[in-house]
Length: 377
Ligand SMILES: Cc1cc2nc3c(=O)[nH]c(=O)nc-3n(C[C@H](O)[C@H](O)[C@H](O)COP(=O)(O)OP(=O)(O)OC[C@H]3O[C@@H](n4cnc5c(N)ncnc54)[C@H](O)[C@@H]3O)c2cc1C
Image 1 (cartoon, rainbow, N blue to C red):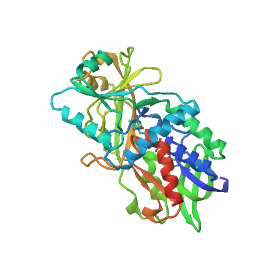
Image 2 (cartoon, rainbow, N blue to C red):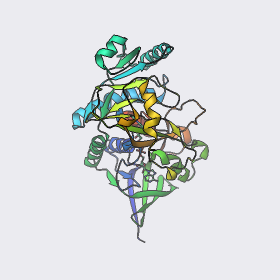
Image 3 (spheres, helix red, strand yellow):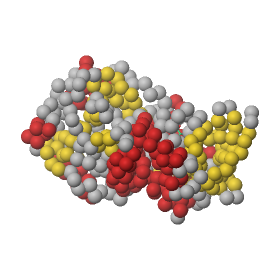
Image 4 (tube, rainbow, N blue to C red):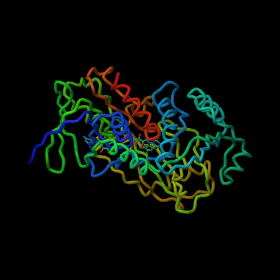
């Protein structure tokens, strides 16, 4: 087994959308960046198992990182897609009330959006809804015109392209197995294709997604008080096997832990429903089973029928799934993103990112700017 040693300015652990955006940001700022990814390629976990929605930033508590970084990130992301030729569509999203008593929830959503600086929501009457989406059954709703969709693979490829042009290196199949402190930074032990590499770096960013707690636990001298618990909440999708009659994204009013079984469209116009919220008993990311149960169409159909009466389980098929790396459990209030810099844990040059669930894809460019600010003090 060979052992080689390298040095860089910034080591980023995890090449999902967030790690790639951070690598790009730091490389463009002039740091020599090495991005380490345990899988055979970038973006093989949560970043390719999501709804690919560019969120407007409506629901998050005012002043939270989710609210701020989603609103900032949305603008940055649309501009990035335009300048880099990444596929996207500003389709708009309808949030629909289907039962008596949900009107107050719509009011609350409108207010939360305004508090977050999202002021482009408009109200929809039953007639407006029928004109926009004739197959929908809803009493009233809201339209968010700045919600859209993105081709997340093209996005990650473009981030990598920028990062590499600025000198960053992505090492695929490279699992960080140990992290020691040095005089001026960190020494990482990396298992790469049967070899062990040593990488020394002044800056260390843990963007390990579902594994971020595991990575943080490796950091020598990091007080484990600064590693939050991990809860996994699986989100299952079903796909529509017939041509979609919808042109907008359609969301029921939110449910605890998620946004309800909603309808999203991909860049080809195909519709999928979900994700639901299925809390996993085992919080070990290595034990995740991404299989979607064959019973999912039967489970989803009645929930979708609340806003699309024509749906039947027969036109739905089990789709794919993704898992949310939550840091608050099923009985707790939903948590904010947790992005801990040296000001929190006291270790210079280290940033840990925990709980980067939705809207992490939308917020990724703004998260990268935020991480850079934490590092530069
Ligand atoms: C069901 C679902 C739907 C979602 N829908 C949306 C949406 O519509 N819009 C939106 O904005 N957001 C959405 N999100 C959230 C979004 O997908 C995530 O916030 C985002 O993809 C997180 O990116 P990441 O880079 O932090 O994590 P990941 O994509 O999980 O990447 C982390 C990477 O770290 C690597 N890694 C871990 N440990 C190590 C190690 N020791 N050594 C080397 N590499 C390591 C992993 O292999 C992985 O590739 C959704 C999430 C889910 C689960």
